[in-house]
Length: 164
Image (cartoon, rainbow, N blue to C red; front, side):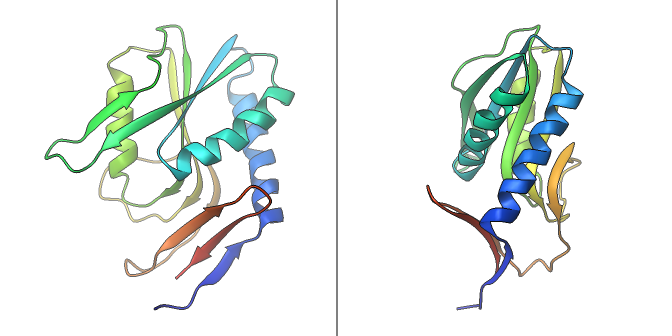
């Protein structure tokens, strides 16, 4: 088993979340409603943390929803817990952006709703793109090899990110 190296402590992640929330607020400050869609599973856990803090910063009405994706099919099937309004400002949230595959498929599903605006947020961006996807707001960009794995561990009292 590969040795794990902590790349973000719980305090680091809390600072990243705070900065990300201010960036979301800055980009969407004119919006009356902001729809956050967390990508399963850890992306949704990350979205929950953003949701809690963003509600204290923004005057907009903030909604948090889950997206689900079945990657076992030849063509992945994405389901949204609640379809967005056409006037909605959407923020897709994931913990780690690696190839862009998952984010691309959720993005594609959101496009079916002709929303007002779509942006994306990730805690960690690995820069190993196979798809032309990027995150608009990133907590940490890290260059790794393809063999490396990044894992964000969410616990109630502590969240950390590791490279192995």
